[in-house]
Length: 89
Image 1 (spheres, helix red, strand yellow):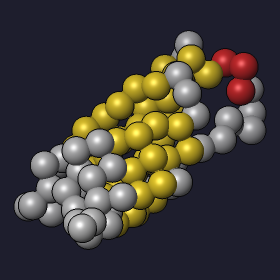
Image 2 (tube, helix red, strand yellow):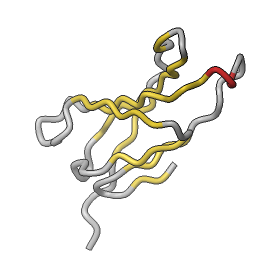
Image 3 (tube, one colour):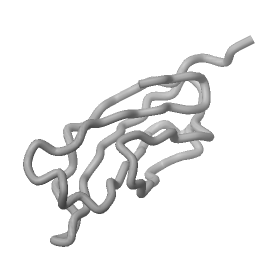
Image 4 (cartoon, one colour):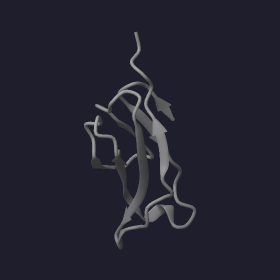
């Protein structure tokens, strides 16, 4: 995991059961801050990592991941809360 003032990079592992059936992952990012430009955004990736850009400095964001297989989207992971760094000088 990497956090700076305007972006967050997250990593997650393959599912324990049937990892061969994973087609992609859905990453959800949300914030309840009125200062944050992202209110709720969903990203789709085939990788087990993603970087979310254009975040507001020193703002708390919630992240969750779900797998997508031929059967559809799975359940969301537990939510991870991260705060971006303050402005760097």
